[in-house]
Image 1 (spheres, one colour):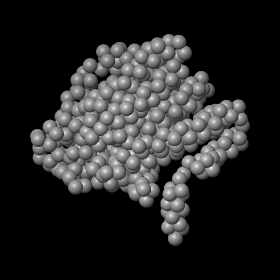
Image 2 (cartoon, rainbow, N blue to C red):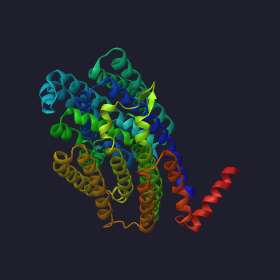
Image 3 (tube, one colour):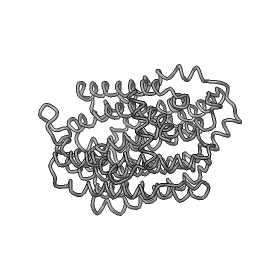
Image 4 (cartoon, rainbow, N blue to C red):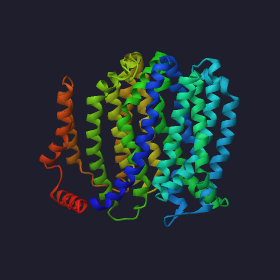
Length: 480
């Protein structure tokens, strides 16, 4: 099985290059904004981008995932399915963006923003339309395993956004307006780079295929809305309960969980097409179970690295004698370990989601994500007024854990998966045992504890004899 998973690992590495480098490039904007924008301005930015993230799920109509599952035949693109999905997304996106543009002023007031910031809503409307137009060509690149092209275009767009944001905010002093203008220009430029994929795949609209894809994709929109509530509802709720400045501090420190976010994001990009292509295999359940174990092992190691080193890295004078993040945001650092653990549960959710996706039980996916959304909103409403941004972080962790538990329970009904619970418990115990003594330890001890993680797994018998033998075989072949 390890040999087969090498394909997943290779594509994860390529998608990971795009995701890691892309998110790292985007993350460079976080220190920039922390030093150039006040916490309240950062809070306004976080609130608008939370709405953009939420609406992006609705804009896509679930057709990008539906195209991967139903729009490709025998590993090849179906132009009629691509055309039907692309034109449907574009038509609805343009209509909704026009409405958002016209209603920018009242929408800004609803978000608690001054009326002069309504221009940010207008920029956001057209960012949404441009990003929606990219969904199908990106899905086609993933489905045809053109990971290099996918990574190259992604990185070019993100790099352009970084350069423009620096120019508009740092050099031209456009403030928040420069942030959103840079994003819009970068999105339009990325869409232009994807134009050859669109033109080469655009066929006549096939209404029957469109209905089939919509019946698969629209329930995923409902699920995606629930999932996005879990991801972004905390920012506007913190802003409403504690003010824009607190929302800015929380949102900035939330992004410091970038390491786990990157790991989960790059894995999910490769995992979905990998497992969907194996929908009819009799050993699909065993494959899912083993991937969950391996992902849990890697994710727990990454979690320890984030917990051990984020604080020292952020407060160190790395930028010409200045700290990476402005001291006015340091009060939010305690949320980072909780957010990183929440992202780990999000990755486990993605793996255990596979049985529902393979059996086309999109209604069950919606039920699981809305369970998480309900937990998130209720705990945010309960905890934020009492313990501030820490309440939002704990609510996020509880929501992702609830989603993972829900998809596991719902998936058992139609496709029982032999998850390796004993090994997962061992992982959790070993991770906790290393986490606890690091709280008051110096950097040298933390490095030693991090290095002890894989050694402890090997010595504990976490890897079976067959896995060790296969691993030795792979390493021998690699050396040869």
